Image (cartoon, rainbow, N blue to C red; front, side, top):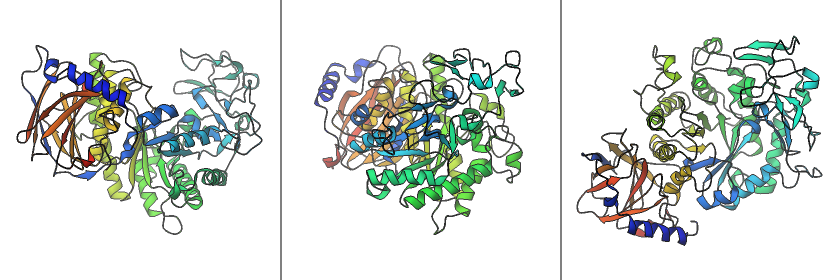
Length: 584
């Protein structure tokens, strides 16, 4: 357990004393209370603390919040040379090799980014999910440590290039020879300037301009270094390795070294080879894959047209992820271990609600409704996903993500864990994004997600960070939501979301007010969970704090005026108060 934070606790106490819950009930709020029922004896299953993970973030701030899992991933992780601490930015920034540590007299360099990343996580007790590149290329060891860096599309070598989008220049502002790889025949008459779906790309560049070929053994040596530095997976070292990042986008993101669309067979063959190498080097390590980019590659490969295409047809018409799971279980490694232990997916809601600052009323409402894409079999996406239609058993327009993939796991590879290692429901400063983040934790716990890492760690003291604090330190003294997920049902999920948890002597109920008015909520328990309750929460203007306290007489609690657009945690203490600070 982390140390208590007396200052935060004092602030929370002052807020609780000065802002009683009843005083937050403005005129004109909903006349009828939203009914919420909780049954602590139904749908009981433990949930994993690893659902509260993040990617990257500041090490010191991560320690303060107590994130239990830290991911090293993303586009640049696909091309990281551990021996010299150099990564390639790919299409995110002109396909350049960017150096890390300056002293290359050691292998890897002392103070390299990866070791520092892992060391910071270990210092505050977090697990690490580390990306192992499988693309087959890594930055050259002789990559310069100052501009000009090696770049995938040199203007000198490949000719005049164009801005990749309206807000980015044609070349790196700090290096005019590092081009975007985009072109126009009118400006670059080279036969290598060819049309694609959205414009013109340069093709037939030499991957060796930036990179060299590597095999799985190259990464086994890296893992051996990590074992020597931090211990193996069974003894405090890196426990989780992911098989690259968004492999079905390589022909776009990393087209300077992998211009061909990735296929079913390539993805599985690499998973078997690299997963086997990881397990050979560290048998206790857990491997995650295939690391999809979103909705389309649940169903088809990069060689297909989003959900369907010739590659899928050549594989029995099976959705890609279902087929991949089948390969995992029908092709074990020598000795019987699996090449992949955790199904690893990325998921961003479409329709303009992810990775942006739009917190308007219409976007906020759509953002919060889009949470139903994760679990509601009847919910039709309010985005281009709906255009895929509902013409066969795949029900494309109805994502139903977690039950869908859990069904594939049960059918094709039982026992596989489930991870969502990239997701985002709005930028850090959006109130609706913070409320969505809190509800995501309830969904992950209820639906059985085993691991999740938000892209990326919230900024310090941001609204999004409040959602993590509500679960990881709701009382300012280290109390966190843990234990079992149990049944909670709201009579109107578009107004108030409801999720419940039990741990030791505590029953905790997450209540999200998704509306722009205060909401009254009546919580009815199937059996009395205790006698004393405290309501914690946050909204646009208040950080996580104690809002109100009370006693229960029977099996119900009436909460008056949950603040507009807020996330709230009702904590009912039972007789077994040894668990009040989260020691369980």
